[in-house]
Image (cartoon, rainbow, N blue to C red):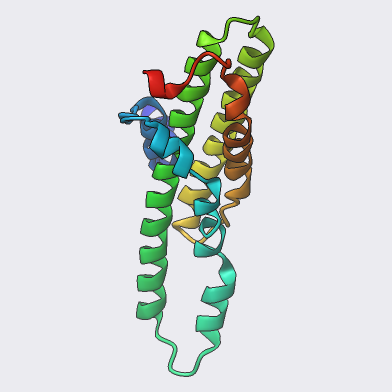
Length: 179
């Protein structure tokens, strides 16, 4: 009886562990944020992530399937390469969000006015981003097996909102250049 229960648990939990363990590892393993310079902030734009949405879109794969001389080996290779590129973009997007969020918190902390409302907005923005990241990570895991499509726009929007609001978080007497 006990061995059959363990077998059932292994069958049910095994596949979910394959999906959840890498996702949870990414949430709890913090990357080094690195240096945040005024130059980086000036040059930064969330538009660099616009192409992410097209990397895993089914259009290119469907087109490839319809071509004469289609080879499954080529399809798998293209899919594997695009998943790897998407992962690199996703890791960079998360790092950029963390950098911007840290910068916003630093600017807010230096602001001499009451910044409770800004702190609440930053907390909500981080929560929204993390929830979107969890969904994206789950979709990415399923996409690796051809079971889902990744909707990255839900991650780009909080990043864009934070990027656009960042200048408003600084008090006139404080700038990152003084750090």
